[in-house]
Amino acid sequence: MKYLFSVSLAFALLAFLPSFSIGQSDVDIGDVLGQRRVNTITTAVPFLMIAPDARSGALGDAGVSSAPDINSMHWNPAKYAFMDQEMGVAVSYTPWLRTLVPDINLSYLTGYRKLDELQTVAFSLKYFTLGDVNFTDEVGNYMGTVRPNEFSIDVAYARILGQHLSGAIAARFIYSDLTQGQMAGGMETQAGIALAADVAAYYQRELNWDTPTLFSWGVNVSNMGNKISYTDEINADFIPINLRLGPSLTFELDEYNEFSMMVDFNKLLVPTPPIYARDDNGNVMFDDDGEYVIESGSNPNRGVVAGMLGSFTDAPGGFSEEVNEITISAGAEYWYDQQFALRAGYFHEHASKGNRKYFTLGVGLKYNVFGLDFAYLVPIAQRSPLENVLRFSLTFDFDALQAEQRGQ
Image 1: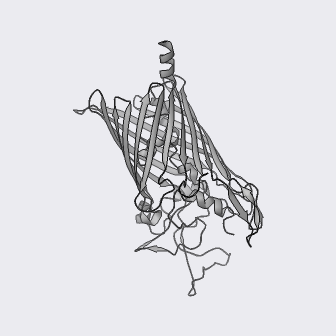
Image 2 (image 1 turned 60 degrees about the vertical axis):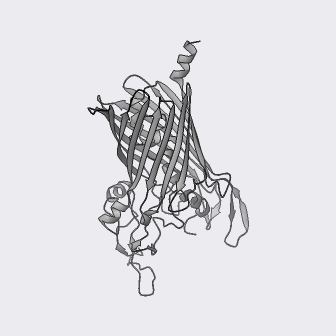
């Protein structure tokens, strides 16, 4: 058994992979899509990369430079420093694979509090449950039912660094219990634990255009942390260390109408699977030390820092493949009187890197203390775990609540 959490992890990887996938430690990537070799990058705990809130989910998973909101923790925690309100809390819920199973979902709780005009602190809790999974041995005998789950707890500190610039750091505790102690492949399993950090920056500035326009730009390097393992007998896997950056423009059309457009570029800062050499019979070749012989690319079994730095140059297809590893998220948002929003977006991933392509749609409503956002995804290249699913987020504006109480 190559991956001891095969059944559970398969569900999680559906978030990012096509109908087949290739792990970082796999020794053969020998599938070809047209003239392009399929060489997807996978990591442990992929739930960390799922868009947790409905607003950005409706914007094609773009959010690194969008207007600051309560759910900025996932996209760019530096945006919290420019929040207008003193305090806010939001909850989000995302059904997962709802067309196949009823009990897989992602829940998200986040909030923030401004300490003063310069400093803001924030927190979030992301919980992903994979439903009931039946374990069997090699001959199919029932070994028990478990309920795999994963969660992360985040805290962040954001600070205004200048008139137009803010920065943030975030710490993250990651817990992944995919087997709940079941024996797998004759090995005893355990929950995987990792610690990670984010470093982010956000810049916004008004432009001297005929129409009042706000230009914003953001960058976030997230999930910089140790590898994670589910047994002492198997090499640990990278978590999804990710570079996210991009700009946005917001046009104040008049007193009531506002329009924004934005784009995010993402690249995983983890090793790309190499191409391994094979003999005339098609068998993988080994060197004198018992290691796989690499035909093209770099050895993926390296440290976290080396993996991050080498992730820009280790693709077996060279620079063109490195470019193909960048995913693009584009979104547009229209607000009327800051009470009603229409949103749309598009997400693009190269065919050789997973082939996720989909449109997104959504609406947002604000009424005094409460805000409600909805998102819907339309896949165009392959099936998606989020098709036929309505995601929602509920936000609470405590400034509005206090103002309402003072008016009574």
